[in-house]
Amino acid sequence: MDDPFDVGERLKTLRVSAGLSQRQLAQYAGVPHGQISMIETNRSSPSVASLRKILGGMGMSMTEFFEPDNQSPGQVFFSADALLDLTSRLGDTSSKLTLKQVGNAKDHGLQILKEHYAPGADTGETMLSHPANEGGIVVSGELEITVGNQTQILRAGDSYLFDSRQPHRFRNISNEPAEVISACTPPYL
Image (cartoon, rainbow, N blue to C red; front, top):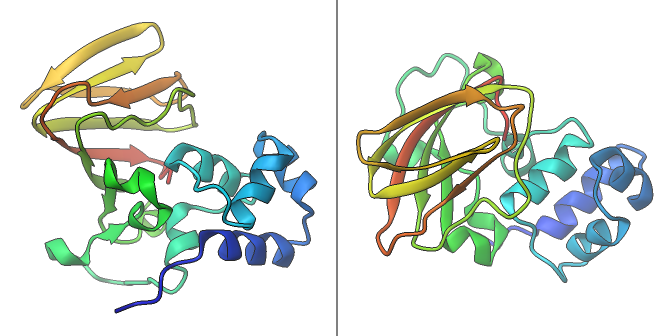
């Protein structure tokens, strides 16, 4: 069995390598200084949205954070078990929300995700916003999606497409899991 991934140690190593103090990284990322410290000492597990924001302060994707050596130049086809799990190493939040990526999104300028939302899963109260466009199709279950001031519950077969600079949030408010296949360009995570 693999050793558990140490999110705090990895973040600290990258921050120090970039020559940044905790305060500088917090300022670049737009998060409280204490949040960086809590994550680096493993006293807090970041949400997907929080980690993405912090990594953005260093110009890094979640793929680069979790799988720095995961390169597949020229690879065209990917089996289900070859998808890169971007969330399993985050701790408790990963049990409700799972994001699995097809290949190396950065190399292609396109991120394709298989998303799983357990009942109660939520991308977070803080709305996401990033310079990209994204769309997806609900494969099973139902998902509440908020984009700007619009909120809708999408069911299997329904889809969405929007400018990701608009604040947005995804929540599973049902009692059944939801699956989504999504794409984002340029890659966000």
